[in-house]
Length: 274
Image (tube, rainbow, N blue to C red; front, side, top):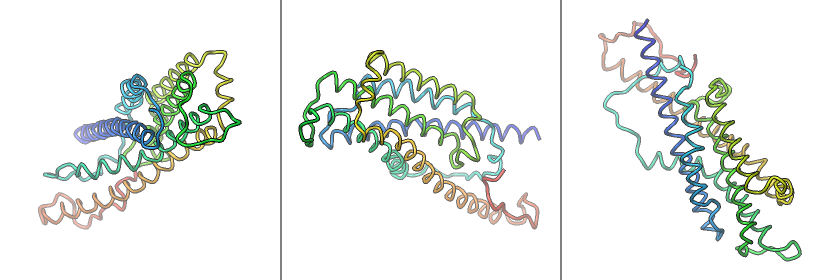
């Protein structure tokens, strides 16, 4: 019983480490797509190097480090571990990260583009693309709003990294108090930075002057991010189930009569049920 408990703790911690590293890779991929996408459509960089450094070196660790303290999941003891099996192909893993981050990256670029487009020309002139360079103060305000928006989407995405295959209804991230505190602290710091950058007296005026498209994107992007995570986790769950059933069959077939599994034992119908 003690050995089983140690094994469960080790597997749970290993899974938490993988998810924390996965979130770090996802955040870097998302920010890379944002910068490349804005350059491809003719926009100035949405985030300055200092803002990128703040997201990569401060915000993302504040969201990923609490994942290491995730609860012990009893489902991990049912996972079949394969031997002499290398990591998945790098190109496949990279393609998954790009596809998962692409919807949120498009939302961030569209939000920044709408802010720049509204600030680059007066309302009486027709809009054109690419937009003319906005005034420096307007560009700085657009970048500050984009920075907070990117941090918000990273916090939304980090919810889905609490577990590799289960969604929030079966493995709620709110049960991890450290993650709740880290996410709230990261968003509070970015909100304070936004207020300080725009000015305490002007922040409401600047936000009220944002175009309607920016408001719609700010409201719809978290739902888009959650839907994207749900679709990818659904695919990962099916892959996990098929992989473990194949490993279970391979394990019992190779050992034959020497298998420690009792005769007549049936394979679990699901390896993700508690």
